[in-house]
Image (cartoon, rainbow, N blue to C red; front, side, top):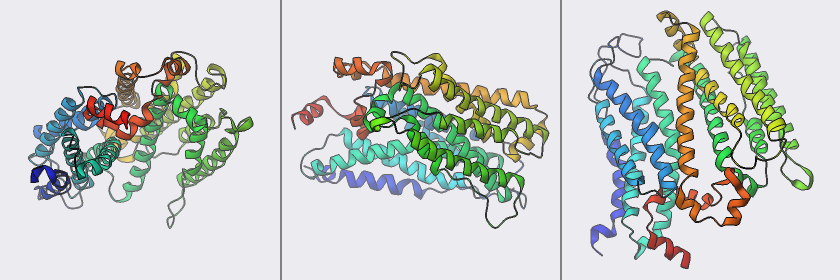
Length: 445
């Protein structure tokens, strides 16, 4: 074996971890007024292309390519190559724009980590695609597979975070006294959206996993509710909002403990309960009456609270009257079961877009709360559509169905298309890189 093939993994890892950080942003921000985060210049066309290119790569193409990898589609590698090309192009454009200038910010700093992860992932993918299995390659290959999977699983979360950083950086938001409020809104809003995505996944592809854990979904929901603590910012004067935040954290903790207990059925069998839905409803009720400074902010928070209350109410109806405490329906999920996750999507987007700075800007432009909320609901519809496309791609792969024994398929119905995916998850989006010969070799071992 030649020397360069022997040490190829170290070369690729070096490229992935050192090449990207070597580049630095060359905008110095001379035109930024003192005390401001951005210059008054508009966003130029190059920066807009950067924004749309990066959203396309990290928000659409990479997640879709990830799912194609899990289902072992031959399109996995071409899609990821396209995403990588767009990401590199967008990254270069981010350093070439004119127009608006920015003070040192978290978006520029975090870009190094994201692009380093991408470089590492590409390097690992190339190495694994070469199928080097002799000598020490056979020893480290399994670890490379696992590392490739871990990076692939973390990438969507990191990408989402970076896109949020990009939005607040472009507008110069979330600095000084506004930082704490931004953290609360973006973390909680993202959590609602993430919870909705998990519900969709569990609805169509997670019942087999739940069955293996021996726990109901409400057990895991209640566990998260119990450990999710909301508290006052210590060292500062108490205001009405802080009191509500703290009491809301107390309610979550108390209700979570009850939900964990009620999840225990007879003979330790998993049991459904309504506590998580009630907690969501109470949280929405509290947020609908949250005191605000602007009339626009009051209306937006009110609708956010009503949307979250509707999510909790539909969850209670689903468990008590649609499922009647069963884990799932036989066959395809009921149309009503889409209500809760979609409303969580909508709640998340409304809450993320309800910070003081955002609503002050919207109010100064003269946009009313109805128009603003309709735009946010439209974004929620599109995001839910994309989520459903990814889930449909995952569960409808014919190659996956072909390997499932008929008895297992009959047992799980529509909601268990992922019964064999626990093993697949270990290799994540690498699946599209594994050859048929390697599969057969693994089976013989």
